[in-house]
Length: 209
Length: 416
Image (cartoon, rainbow over all chains, first blue to last red; front, top):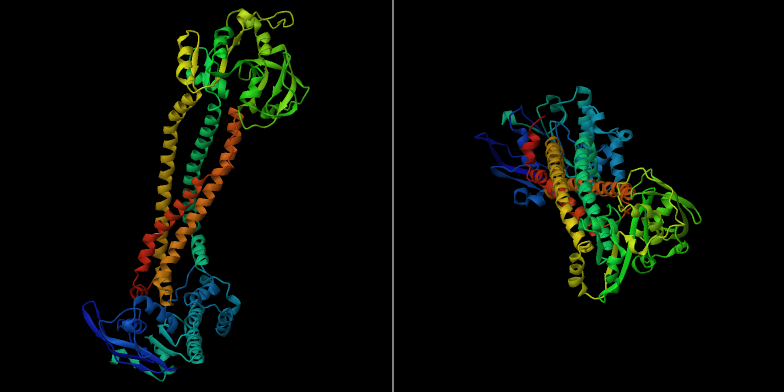
């Protein structure tokens, strides 16, 4: 499903190399690394948010570097859902409208799907609320819903739990795992959060690479 | 959805959006007001000026002669002897010549002494009620004059001396309403019409004194004896003669003949009004420049508002891009914001312009006895609307382009 080969970037005149990974459909994969190890850059390369100085990323056997920027936007929207450490939403829209907007970008409209997912993360009764009324843990739960809203094959999560307390961390990571399993998506998490290490069978440690 | 997003983003920052809308609306309002006033003024002036080829009156200011006797707004230049202008009514180039004689008013509505042709040939106006004046002291009221004064058929009133409202009443100059005119949209709506004889009889005593002073405030004997005194033919005076030509050749001969006579002066309304409008034009231009200046401010206000809003929204925009929004869609969504602000500003400005014009129109109508309306629309407004919308979109272009070219990865990597 996802293969990377000889990926590298130049960052502040230093070359950073990344290990090759090969993740199959439905698998969960953890990438550990301390801050500054380039793990966010690695994730952005996999998601096509930035392009590498060397090497290639293949998703479904398609080299994403060969896509035009317009096609890549579309490709990313269809295939990949992102979750970031600080969840960003459109501040002027409420929860439901934010999720509808993400569907709109891909020409989808499915209120039932929004409701089902919000139900699963326990926030259905708050869908008309504005996002600043939510706690960090709750926001992260909404961003899981947003990442899954267009049923992507891949979920990429960048430090999804590091801003959360143990209790919220537990809830978020279980939701993330269960929901991507239900959707049969690949889940790749990059983090320095050691709490997650025991929860994943497949992982790679960038510090040890 | 894009509209919803743009709309929510606009009302998320009500003060800066409000300022842009307000500036835009004010500039459009001022442009529209200047335009509507000038247009109506020009139309009213030209309409009335084109009805009469030549005004003949006493020497003085030509513009004043026209304003007084065609538009009934200025003071008379003086009086002329009826016998001095009889040659004009017999001239082969002249189609019609209608005398008018001013002197009195009732509650600031002018009492105009004239002959029957004034209503039959010049300002052809249907009667709502009653008939034309025949005997002295019978009057016909224009539509607005009757309405504003609340006079009905059969009512009577005392005229006041002078052409503007004054306290000096002719206690025994009692006029009787014998006719009410329908609305015509012309100057006649604001006049009280009577026969020349009425005016001559009221003012006989003044004429005897050999002066006809319009700023007349002096004490004098109020007891005229109209029934006993008859005005001598020799002394009959009028304020002006309104002349229409039979042939276009008259234009080149008659004014010259009139102006050669030392007691007479001729003025062509069309020319005088053009001169007046030429005088007013620069003032209107100054107002227009002011309006464009405010329009420019509005443009920068929109631009700065959007640029600032983009700064605080760059994570949102990066997120939109990450969730599949193409850069083109982001561009369009920001342009839509500029478009919406401009749309609201334009409509607010156009509505305000018309409403304020209507309110000002009531004042102007009261003041000049001329009908001004806010509820006339012009093709020009469509251009104003499109121009504003285009400006809104252009002002959004700079922030939109920077969002279009945004590097998502590095934006998202910068932690707040």
